[in-house]
Image 1 (cartoon, rainbow, N blue to C red):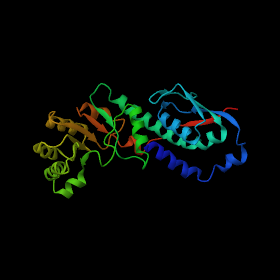
Image 2 (cartoon, rainbow, N blue to C red):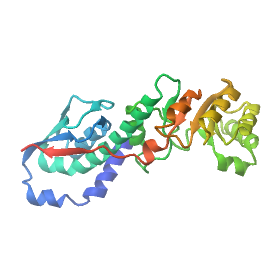
Image 3 (cartoon, helix red, strand yellow):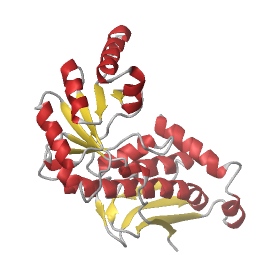
Image 4 (cartoon, helix red, strand yellow):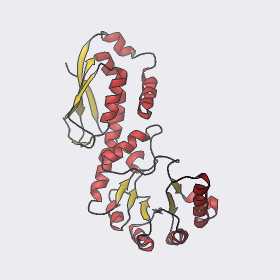
Length: 278
């Protein structure tokens, strides 16, 4: 239902009272076929979105493919064909491309990070640094690239960050308040806390509350020291300043998770093109 709502809103933004270019230049009954062409090497993502867009625009369109999300794709490759009313194909074209290009770009970058930590126990995770109303799509793209999803939103996990800690009066106070809140509201949510130094890790551990401790903007060496302090009593996560160049060093520190905002907030879209077959 969320995907359908997204597609409906996106089409309303783009089409409004009609695709007047296609309506004025192409006969309403003209049949045709289009192919999605790859213009960059990368990882494919967004196939379910493309199918859903075409289906919603015109249930009579026939979609055919042998590709799936997570596939390695190469320049010059044809990913899918869609056949039917040409006006319908062109009405759907831009939304399909916008979604698939961004999703495939995210999947491609995620795969590079996942490959970089192979052989370690660290999982590459996304963040909430996503495009408004596209979070469902962008997090699906992270999974297609071999990454893992962090919390989806504010509602499905308690993540106590520096602003919460400072406003609550400290690490211990914030954790105890969060724990009591879950008891009072009869909620079952994981609790994670962000720490800025080794002393804050010790304070968090003394409460016995967090399900995961985040090391925020630690160096790889500090992260290793943090892992030693935690000593397996809870999950650990490195976050902040993670790049392709240093991610393996963080993974080798022994952390369980590495969250990377760059997977979604500054990714380059993969170049794809939808072309009518003459």
